[in-house]
Amino acid sequence: MTNTTAAPAHDHRPLTDRKAPAPAFQGLPRLLSLMTGAEKHAPAAHSTLDALWVLYSRVLRVTPATVDAPGRDRFLLSKGHGPMAYYAVLAAHGFFDEELLPGFGAYDSPLGHHPDRLLVPGAEIGSGSLGHGLPLAVGTVLGLRAQGLTDLRVWVLIGDAELDEGSNHEALAHAGPAGLEQLHTLVIDNASATHGWPGGVASRFASAGWSAVTVDGRDHEALYAAFTAPHPGRPRAVVARVEPKN
Image 1 (cartoon, helix red, strand yellow):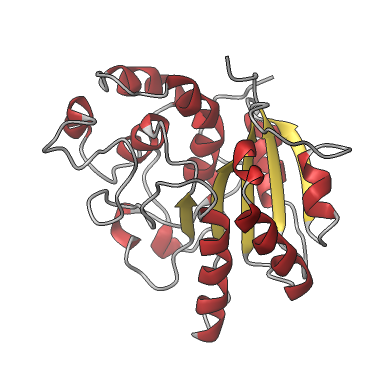
Image 2: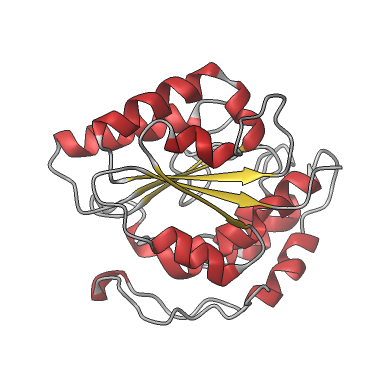
């Protein structure tokens, strides 16, 4: 059962990174409705909505004021097609003004059909071809470790169909044995993958040494528990199952 309450049971973030309560989850449909036009990839967008909301409302340690702070959490959107849910959540949390939303996809709008890190406040990477986000997240963790920045987390959101790409398997095969505890992968599973694995997507990560779990991608409390569960010495994978893509 989905819980639409935005406030967490406890606020574990540093005082410098806490923010005013965001609008309620029920306000997101209005923000989504502002984005009109063609090529919206609506099913792809809606599949990510609940997970993105829980991450930004209750888990990620990043705010509009700390988007450039070295110690911020990083969120990488690899599943970049159909980014309306991402834009709606960013706008709801004050990363940019909702007045930008009606221009989605227009020639002169910063809100393109794939997010551009140089144009969208809060976006860590530009997305395009699928299969790049998880390798970039692995590289981000390694780069941060080299700088001594180990008290933060790197999140990457991928789609289950991205696991058709070999680059992801190389990345997850490295991350497990390397013990990249800072790395968190959120897999939105809407049954789009060409290939499958015995036991489901989570089994693929577990076999490579990850801490992995599968949850209902519409259940906010289940998502929150999965996102915040301890996983010492191992990267974390959360597979969020949603309704199959039509």
